[in-house]
Image (cartoon, rainbow, N blue to C red; front, top):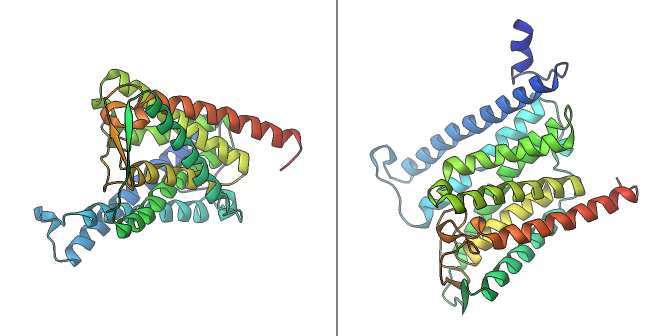
Length: 309
């Protein structure tokens, strides 16, 4: 019993255990990092509001964009704590986490996100579920920049936790496929808890959950294909930013933070555009994500066949 307790403790770097014990150990570490960062982040947000002259403990909160921006900037604590855990408990380097010298892959990930969303929008346009109304000439440039940084922080946080920490550490003990599935489940579950996907109706909930798994598998595959998490950080952050800020549409059930640079009108809510939950619960996203997974599989296979490491 004592040996099992030691094996399952997330505060040591033991590897001599069964695969099942190892998976449980790393999931416990994931939960520990998630909640420790959440508690610390909440304290920082409360402290920030208090320092600005508000009284958040009694419901006196800032309004406007600042109220949304501060929590997003607070996500950096999740990344810091995850990296510190990997470095000091697991004794892993930044390169082993996936933060290699190939930082330019971030731009490749961003381009993939833009290409995917362009195709999703085209599918929605040709089916008549959305309409393009033109450019927003009154868009806030300051807002575009501030939210750009916010989504860089938020997207990178999820990738460092789910791919850099969890998936990469699981692959040290178990095969790639279960490591991808377990890390994808760790990615999906917080979205189910923290968003309105289960309130969107059974059909949209099922499509949304399937899409969450598909997009997480895509993130994992491009990490394995390129050998770093910069590319998934770029894809994740750009997907959320372009969808929510540039297009001014719902992301994971959360309304747009500001009026978008491009004006898109949802004509009717249906399974193509994802109804109230947004594109991420629509079959347009399902279609494009599956196509992208097939493309990455082909490129990954070609890379391996050519002996490229």
